[in-house]
Structures are given as structure tokens and as C-alpha cells.
Length: 424
Image 1 (cartoon, rainbow, N blue to C red):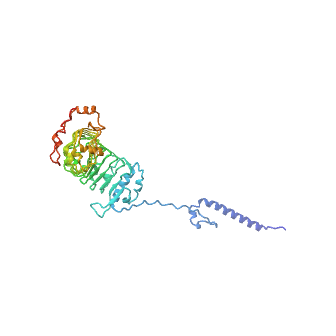
Image 2: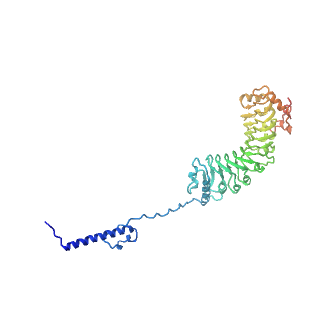
Image 3: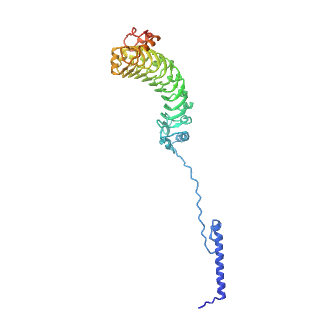
């Protein structure tokens, strides 16, 4: 069976093929510009085929910066100060500064808020306690001195260094300053002298050097800790009245004698620590005026002379340390009668006589008299060493004062306490 195709059919088929070819070519030409205006509306297309335009990614808008809202304007003022200080911290092994984020400064670790004295309805950073945080920073300048409402600043046991800015004198409420056990250096921070509200100063275990202004001892301080620095100066004898309770000057390089007036000025002292310095001269009888003292430590100096009987007036004393000096003479029995005495250390001196009551305390371990020149006791210096010491007589001024006890009935050991070391 054969099929006959008419000329008309051939023409019709040719037109259909041609139309399809045209449409295909037009479609091919349109795809490269699918993202152009021609894809926005189908009305622009003159072909019957609907084109799908590719979806372009929606451009993302920039994120808005976080807006910090502070509980009080005073907090907003110190926020950039804290953040700037955070940026210079070189070591934070405990991760303390990770909490210093956001506007809630009162929840930053080490920061504490309170109502400032000039506005009880306000909220401000009132105290800082960095004790034991082990933070390291090259300076506190621009931080501590820029905290207008700070009252207490404690930064014991960190690795802060540099010197202390004189601008801390402008802090109106600061009354406790503890920067002990750090790496501070330079001269004594004299700015504290003009801080009338300061009652507690602790700068021990640093590298401060030079002299200490005499005005420091006339301030109304409750506690003054200067020990373990490199201060090299004599103790001032022009001291005024003060009510210091704790005074530590140990482990420095103080020179010269212990001034007589120091005990009149510090009659309320509870602890006096003068050990490990380079103090010379004889002990003044005014030691006996320290009626509130529980500890008096002048060990490891170059003090000489006898022990004054006025030590018997220290009714509250528990520890007396004069070890490691060049004291001589007898150990006063009145001192061994002190009711609160727990330890009397007289080792490494040149005492030659000790009475029966003191010997009882030696047996009990209360009195340490080792390495002296007492012939009938064990663990004493050699005869040659003692002879060499006494071959060079030691003089003390105001010799009468060593037999004077301001709190006891008249009594004298004048015949037993020489004005100078006896010759062998």
C-alpha cells in the first residue's frame, strides 16, 4: 500500500519545521540575557514560549551594630575605660576578661557596683577586687586613675607593672588601695599623700625604691604595708600623732636607728615589723609605750646594746623577735614574766646572762637563746667568737633608760646591764 503526499502537504510540513527552527533559535538567544529587563515581564517576549528567569540571590543588608543600654550613665562612662584596659592585658590564664562583655558592668568578674556617696539613686563601679587573678598588664595608668567613683581597689597577686599615676590623687572616694605582690617599680607613689580619705595602703612585695616621705607617717591610716620593696632610707624621727594599727616595714633597706618618737606616735600599733633591714643603734626604751602591740619583730638587723626593761610593759605582746642582731648583756627576767608571751627569739646575739624564770621558758620552747655567749647553755657561740665581739666595746646613749620601766615599780638592774659591752 502506498501513500501519496500532495504538494500542499509538503508545503505545510515545511512551514511547520521552519517555525520550530525559528522558535528554537530565538529561545537559545534569549537565555543568556535571562537576567535582563526582558525577563521582568512576559509581555516583552514576542514568542509563544514562556521563559523562566533565574532567581538571583537577595542582597543581604549589613547587620546593625549592637546598641548597649547601661543601667546608669556612670556605667557608660567607665565602659570604654574598662575595654581599653582589657585590650592591653597580655596574660589572663584564668579567663577573667571573658566576662568583661556587654553593658552589665556590675556582673563583670572583679567589678562591684554600689550607690556613690554623691547620688544614692545612681549606680556606679564602686570597688574592684582582682586579688589572685594573675592578670598581666604593662600599666594601670588610664584605668585606675580614670574610675571616678572607685572606693576600693584590691589587685593583690597579679603581674601589673610600671609606676602609679599621680592622677589617683583626684579620686575622691578611694580609701583602700592594695597593689601588693605585683611588679611595680619606681619611687614611692607620693600621690597618696594628698588623698585625705585613704585609710589602707598596701604596696608590699613590689620593686619600689628610694626614700619614703615623712608625711606618710602622719596620715590617718589604719594599716600601712611597705615591706618587701627596695626602700633605702632612715626612719623619720619627726613623726606626728597617728592611729596606725598595722605597720610593716620589713625586708627593705632601712638604715639608721629606730627613732624614739616612732613609739610615741604609734602607741596604738598592734604589729610592728622591722625585720630584715639595716637598722643600727640601740633599742630605745620607748618600745615599752606600744601597749597594744601583739607582735614586735626587729630581727636580722644590726641593732646593738641591752634589752630595755620597758619591754615588760608590753602586756599584750605575743611575739618578740630580736634574733640576728648584736644585742648583749642579760635577758631581763621581767620580760619573761609577760603573761601573753608565746615566743621570745633572741638567737644569734651576744647575751651573757639569763635568769631562772627565762630558763624555764627556754625549756618550754618559748625563749630561743641559741648562738649567744651564755657559758652553761648548749648551742652557744665559741669562746673565741664571743671574745672577739667583746674586744670592741659597744656604747649606748641614755644608759639610764635601760633600767627604767614606765609601767613597773622602781627597779634597777644597773649593776647587771653594762653601759658598754664588758671586756673578756
